[in-house]
Image 1 (tube, rainbow, N blue to C red):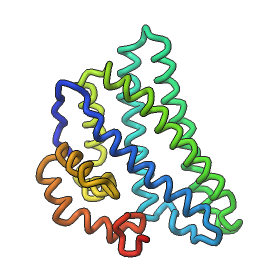
Image 2 (spheres, helix red, strand yellow):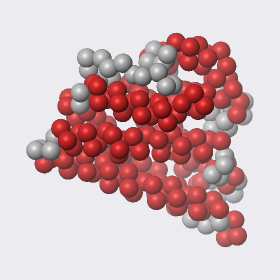
Image 3 (cartoon, helix red, strand yellow):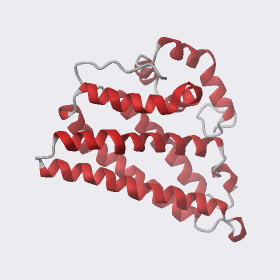
Length: 222
């Protein structure tokens, strides 16, 4: 995961869309689980495998956007008010999402009151995150594709690779590809170093499916 990304002639958004697909997959699980009457909140606790991974990857991704991607675009587009407003909106949306994650954690910790507020917190989080993903895909990603130099996109990608590192790679790669089509899996794995792709097929995918009850390939998955 620490191998630097080699910039191409254009920005390749494949990983961004694959990551968004992973977020949508998990946020649907979060909302569904929290909404089921009598459901065991332990399925979503902060130490739960799926919830913990989801939060870690989302935090890494949003931090890279806030610290590298949006500031660089603001530098490049400082004389274009509409684009500046869009980038400011991306940061504001991140700012609304983080407290909702904290609200879910707080509700999950509130055993004394029967986890009151979990359903509402999960619904609010799902609504906010899904709206943000749509907004980013409809307006920010086309702007990135058109205006961001590939070398800056590579720097953004490398910052996330460095945060994930080899330690989290056996979880991140199968998380990213869980439930993806064979075509998407092939497309994404082509971006990673060949040894990581080989490990995904040899062991990581099966290990992840066994460990994570949220996985579409988990033995108990319906």
